[in-house]
Image 1 (cartoon, rainbow, N blue to C red):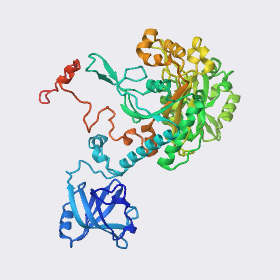
Image 2: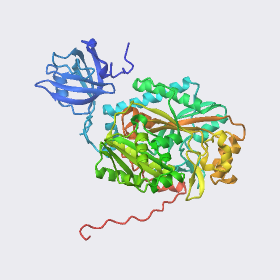
Image 3: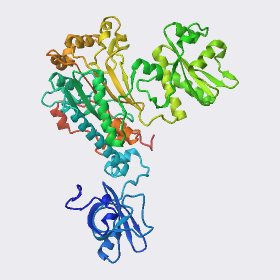
Image 4: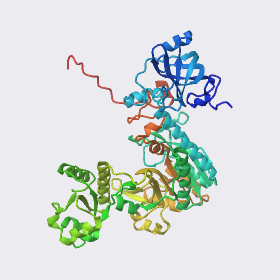
Length: 601
């Protein structure tokens, strides 16, 4: 039976041949990976998507020998020859094809390559700018091909798992209306409606909710999403999310569907059987214990609450916060710190809003710290007992409002993990973070705004607080965290139009503005909407984690730089005046100041 990748130009891919194919005549096609002259014999590695195989050109085949002599790196050739075992001692155990070679009977050059702008070998060092400019060369590297193959495996596993679970893949519009969802929109001018603009979707949020109102019940798509925001390692102006929505569900139903999909993905991509259900952690507990809403729980280092210890303390900083509704907490670790390292941690705490960073060094001779003179013996013993501190440990303290202490000690915890590099308790740690605050106060605009998105439903028994304590209302918002990375975010939505309007009102939208911004959704909710919820999972982030990459650019075929440009296509770029005129757009930029003449400057 022919190999699936066999074509009219080749009988086999390069890397599927083994010693069992000895003496078989084959035709292969691919790139010349490297060429070697071994005393009258020419060897070269032929590479295609499947891998490498060694080809040998011998002088008795004069034409073949001459062609091999002139081959350059990355030339594309077709080789016909006989599979044979390599001579004893000439095997390469690092290659799947290391036991065999192809004795060439003919070599046909299909195309030649110019001199390469950089070495595309796996261990070569080259700037990212050059890698992206010549991405077609960069993608020939085995690692990059492996990353894209993993991405394909993840996407197919997700699709198959969701389809088997009763979901229907539905595409939603790419040209839509701008809505306030947390980031700047990419705008597209409309030629047919002069002065008006489409927006590229930040997510398919409103449309997937409308699909639930439409009776689809279970929807998914691998959706392209666009956000005009500052870039970093895990952000791109365009990204892909596995987008899912379900009707007649609770939080537990949505979590179970996501976990089933993740089990299928990990089994297909890395051969791991995940244990489900994933643990759940309330947002309040996550912030108190880890100082983060996306904690990496593989390393321990939990934050310990000491507020009760200092309710009657004479130490002003701790006592006033403990008695005044604030919090006093500590994080401890077994490590030695120099004075300069403690100072750097103090600067980090200040950068996150703290006034300073108190600490205690625990030694066999007793504790050491500038704050000891303010603490009673009983307080010191309570600290030691609650933190579990031992000689050779340090404890670092935060005392302030609850949110400030959480943020500060969360940053300290992350820095301690980076410094100490402890061995993780498990390669993969999943956790659902649940019941985020529904609203956050926006002091500059003097109004409430959404903590995650404006469509999230409050917990049923906390709806009355919308009239009295909006900032205390917890929601059906949940995030799926993997190894300290927010992998997915979702919620149970507001399916009642009156409740959705009330929440929009708290955010400062009057009735007219609600209809201008969200009329598409509100009109749908007015015609009978089922309870529904879902999530969006970052496909790029998931693939980066599975491939061991720090940047999602490494798992995207044609990414943008941190400046939002594409060196390969040179986007974004100018357009012709005629196109602007058709769109009724005039470019108004300040004049560019000419560079100074170096001879007169």
